[in-house]
Length: 511
Image (cartoon, rainbow, N blue to C red; front, top):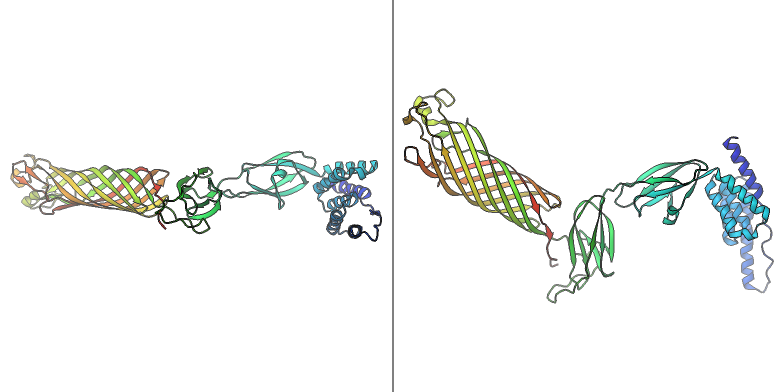
């Protein structure tokens, strides 16, 4: 038997059982009884809706008939109106609702039904079961809003099997901080309690804030949200949580929010503000203090690649092979969000080979790079110690940073000795050693990244070092000041920093 024929037989059977004329429901009231007159008027109105429903059903206007039978049942509950509600629902192919309505007839009006009538209704429910299936919808988010075909399901509906007509249905699940899920449910006749798992994927992190007093206001990142408690989604990263009330010292905490995880904040009972403090504004929307300044200790290890541009006296490094870099540590304190001070300790070294001895070049009347060149090697070591001033942008995770520093640098230069087999010693720069302390200036510009407490930083940097005090003696015993002509050194390169930060918000600022 085809499905169309089967549905036709069910419809005819239901019509024969359910679509009946409405008999008089109540006896006529007494004329002098106002309450009875009201009841009689309600009864007459219910009868009019019922008759209209019968007429509309016979005309094929099943939606109109359903509205009329429902109106009749609201005014005068009875099995006849409810049975015809089920029949109209069936005609509209709303099989699951029709079955539910018939079960309501049995649960609400069983005493008013004859034995044969009850049996016929149970048979109609069994017939409808072949056109209905049931599913259980489960989600991984308790507060998710779940709807089927636009009908929102409450917690009670989600806790029990959901009866649906055979065919396709649109299932939608959504929740703040999660991606929306929409899919098609295909329901087969007679299927029982098929589990439909709906997994929502987090697109944010979550913060749950609880205050001790229901009159305490909760704000996040300076935005007032609710009194007493609040839970909601936030973008991953650092956020400011504030709990405040007029006349009380505000509570605040900087929290790290991770994707898909809930950070819980239990605020303590607020204490009265000190008598000399400026009173807090009332806890109303728009009045919390803004984001607090960030303060705290930090430390960084550093490694840098540095190029050297200055020549010792009578030695040219332009065509030489050079390698240079530095290693160091920095420790400092962030005074507030844009400003920090730190102390730098750093050591560096440059190794240069193939430098040109310009005395030999002049004596031989040839250019460096020819066979007259005497290749020389030299080593420059540096140790720096000094304070830095760091300026930072206000980004929570990524920020721009620049550093200005001054301090003392100790240079030590060592030039290799001259070999007799290479050139006449009288025409070459003798080897030697020189060292000395001078001031330096540092300029860095870069970008910094906070991964939790971890700090990562990439900088372009420049050192401008004094070198006029770098002095010593050469291999002949004469005094030697290799940078007396230039008086300084210029180094530039790229630096990588990595370390740890303990940023925390400061005490509540004055308003």
